[in-house]
Each structure stands twice: as C-alpha cells, then as structure tokens.
Image (cartoon, rainbow, N blue to C red):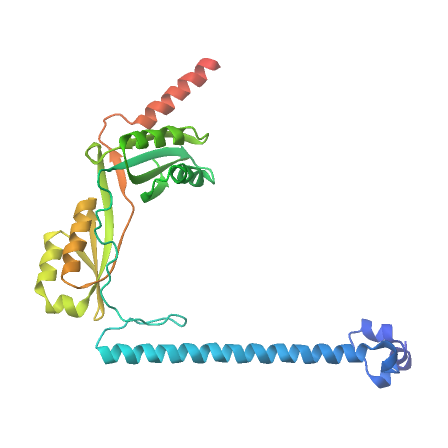
Length: 286
C-alpha cells in the first residue's frame, strides 16, 4: 500500500491513529471531523485550565487559613498542634468531653452480654432492638470469644429492669444469636481504658496534676513539649473521677475512653452450658 493510498483513504488513515487534515482527507466541510477534533481539543484545554485554577485556589486558601490560625494562636499565647497537609491547626484550649452529667435519675445501668455466631449483619439486628424501644446505648464492645466462631457483644444502657429483660428476650429471638443475659455492676467484673491528653506546660507548672495522676495509678505514655498523654485502666467510676479532677485543674485537652468489657462472677459459664445442651439434643436426634 503506497503513501498516496493512505492519504486519499480516510478510513485507512484513521485506523493507523493519524490525525485528519485538509490536505489529507479533502474538504473538511464534507465530513466535519477536523472541526470535531478542534472542538474536543479546546474543551480538554478548558477543563485542564479550570482544574489548575481550582487547585491553586484551594492550596492558596489552605495556606492562608493556616497562617491566620497560627497568628491567632501566637497572639493569644495558646499552644498549637502540628498539622498534616490537609489539616488546619486550632488552639488547644481545654475541652469538656465526657463531662459527668446526671441525666439518668431513677434508671439502672445494665450490662448486656450477648453471644452470637460470626456472621455479617448481626450487630445491626441487635442495635435495631434498642432503637425500636427508644433505649440509648451507652457503650458497645464487640470481640471474638474463647469459643471458635462465636463473637461476644458487651452493651451498656440505662433502663428499668423490665425493659432490660425485654431487650434480652427480643435479642435472643434472633436466629444467629446464641445467648443473651443482662447484669448489674455487682454481678460482673468490669474494666475500661481511657486516654487523657493534658497540656504539658500546665502539667509542669502545677504539681497537683502529677499528684492526681499518681493517686489514681494512671501512667504516662507520651510526653512532649506540647502535650502529655495519660492512660488509666479501671472501673468506670475511677476513670470518670480521674477525668473530673483533672478537668477541674483546667489541663485536659482531650478525653476518650473505650467501651466496657466484662466477665461474669459465676463459676459456671452459661455459654458452655448452652453449647453442651445443644450438643446433647443433636446427639439424641441422631
């Protein structure tokens, strides 16, 4: 195939990835492909230009916001935390996260321990039982149990005894739930872990802060010129009392605690009894 045939045959030229031109495909007013390519090229250029302007605008605004935040922090004498590329620094003023609020008068804190098979979607079924009865979940912890293929859910909520018993019965009706029980605090062993982020300059300036930390047997896990991280593991009351005392000293920057984990005080594991009973029934049927 010679060069003249390629030039004079638009389909052959297109198959080889070439561009159309007036000298190659003839009169542009006939096919219109030259105009389409030019229009597409102008559109692509406009898109690239708009994207570049938007990106530069975003970076400039972010830099300007960071600079303004640092200037405000320096003017007020507050500390500021280091930030990543897309995070903006903010003044590290004391917060009141996890404050003690007595909004459950007349209600008892119940701990529900639930065992289920390890299938997707079971947690949604369990929480839906609380939602339908307008019971708020205070904490929720999910983990694998010592029994293979069985997961354990530890859920706490404020309610009356009748409501706690009703929740247990409704949850046990779920097909994949093996067992559910409710307990009060004196029937189980309880443990929680919390992290408190304290202002390092205030910790150094006020010795009472270190005394409070030692009195509650908490431990320091991170210390730097900006902040100090304290870890406390214990029962719920001790964790909240430590936060309350440190918050009164105006040194708490952040406070977070895990959900409750618990084991029963009974010498007999109810789940083991349930599984043994199921095995006996299955062997009897065989």
